[in-house]
View (cartoon, rainbow, N blue to C red):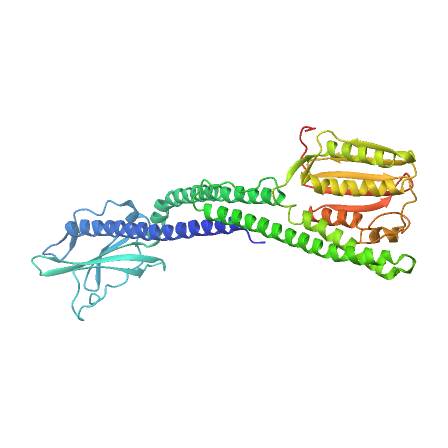
Length: 456
């Protein structure tokens, strides 16, 4: 199942990472350009020192009043070189250059005309050892233009990247820290922003279980339309259920009148009455009773339910059954946890437990046991008797609508099916087993029950 929170987190992290990469790339470009300018300035300063220090006397010998102060020009193969030439003849060179030569300057500047030598030019080149150089070239006229010297200064291009990286590493580290902090804050904000949705989902679940009748208005106006729509839906469902229940009741009562007339006319015939008509009338009445009971509790399980104290309901049922079966000497033993609560309609709970206890009393020889245990997640009810029990193949049939396993015992045959329907609507389970007492044991489990103090 897709997760909105996970999707938002992925979008946030991807956006922050993309922003980090773009910022890093732009910053690298800026820092690299600045490092290149500083590098070119270093070359230009060295070239300027050479131009000011150079002198070409009448003896046609070059003299330098001083050399560039940068010690890198004195280290062999350091990548920092300078050379002074007249035409194709090298007049002086840096100690770092020794036996190598710098590439010749182009005859024309980019975009210029052939034969036009530029006053100053910066361009990439390859050094004596094959290293990448950045070279600055300048033509310096001396003795009123009578002599023109060609001065070239070069430096290793790798120093540009090294300088840029030294400037960038702490900046990148800072940007990474900021990106992680920003991602963390945005993830926390996503969780905080989705919290009202989680609260709303919990309220809807509580309404579906019947703990609350309506959803409360949200503190956030964006969620109020959804809250109102859910409340309208709950109200519409209640109206539809009430109307369906009323129609089912009206139809049943409309059928009962002619059905009673048919039954009375058949009974007036005395010994000549038709047994098939009597059987059909009985079947129709059982179907009517069954559907009337279903109409009574259908749709109520998930809406506006109450917290029913289980001990008081069990006490009432035991009292009624002891009075009904007192002439048989039947004993009913009940053990109920204090504080056990059923979340639902009291009539539904009485219907389920009453039918199970009544069925146990019908078949018991002398003892019926009722045991109720509650936990934070479920309400477990066990009802068993010491009767003859049921074979395994008949236990599932006993829960089918209108199924009567023994026609000699009074009843419509819909009691256990009503219990099964109610248990299903409440999201529970019912299992029929063989009791240790020898009879039948009905195990009933209803979910989402929370223990509270005993109410009665």
